[in-house]
Length: 541
Image (cartoon, rainbow, N blue to C red; front, side, top):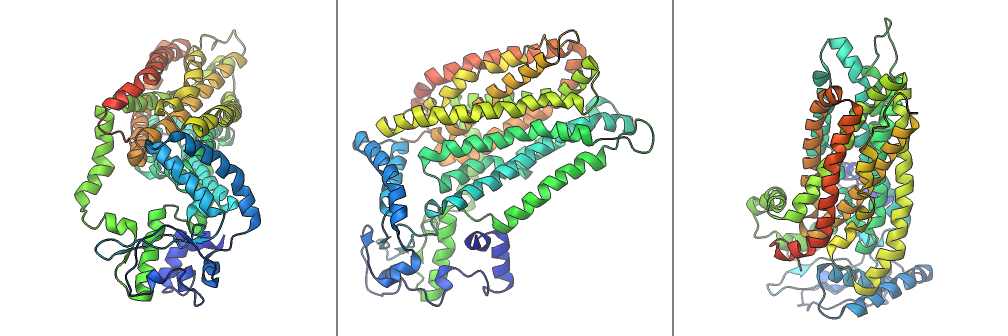
């Protein structure tokens, strides 16, 4: 925990204010010794693979223990078997798998890593040992669970705020004398803002954070819980807001602002404080960069550089901006597979349409009050508890075994769970049962089916996009989120008039018809995606 605080925003700010008197790194410890002479010797060094060392200096960095070796044995054996079946012609993902194999095997013992030296005399600053505790892959299980917990809480808070406003829109209409469209603008602006800028870090970099701390073969498990946190937010927000909004002053005057706004603040404030105090840097490049700077300061050798410094030595802002901003849009425009995935994610935001209109519709049909009309959203909470164990079971008993046996295969294999549940979306939206003559449980089950389909499709897409273009994964997810937010923001505006003119049953059936078309396209993406990928100029091999 001490290292997490040291590497957090709070720890870095404290170092700046106190001029490095507190939260010192291992290199700034007076007892620190270099595990390799390359950092201090002036003689030329040849870059070599890791070598086993037994001197006391290595123990300052890390000490290997028998229990850790026992924990790694079974994982290493399984992954080593996968490596031997691939042969020498490995694709990108299998090369990553092979790398993870080597890391697992090396972490079982303490090995010092002799730094490599380039032809022009630059010494590459890397991890000191194979089990260097600063390496995110070597962090403790508790730390590797605590970091995803913070990302999940952040995502939950962002999505909670997107739906908590919907229960107060009626109060906005009454208080300010405006129509439903104008009253919904608060929700529109929030949805568009949090997906396009303010909240995009949790949505676009969540998967990248998990990739920093987990082997590729284990990332889908963390994405399961991350997608679950994203699903719980919109489900619980209308319920909490519905029961907290109460009359104030006169009869029927809603106390809307001080209820839903305070609930969002109560949730976001401790989440923000937790992240400022204890969310560390997870990117290996961003961890090794300050290490190189510290080593240059300690040794006075300016040829000690991190890999990121070497890679960016000849770069300017133009290519960086192009890769981060223009390239994702270019891939979405020119690659049919990614364009469809983005479109489908945007249509997934139809849940925002339903959440903004469902409580009022239920209230009119069954005579529920504001709090009771939001209770059917509890079925949305139940849905992830069905999907999450099912997906984990599928991945553990089917997908992971296949990866260990024959490699990762085509990226489209990540879409298989979505193929099974994509029909649940139109099934849940055909809401002809939303009628005062039919019990409320019928449309409630429909909302649950809708969520099962949306959750699984979102999970499949979150895994599919990074596997398709791993070098642009973060930017692609950001572009994907932006498209979804823009679509959702627009739909919230016109959803009210559409549902008012067509009615709940016909309005939901309109969405169901669109979902049926996407279901067909989803299957086409699975079957024809590999051929499209071969023709893409962006895919890695």
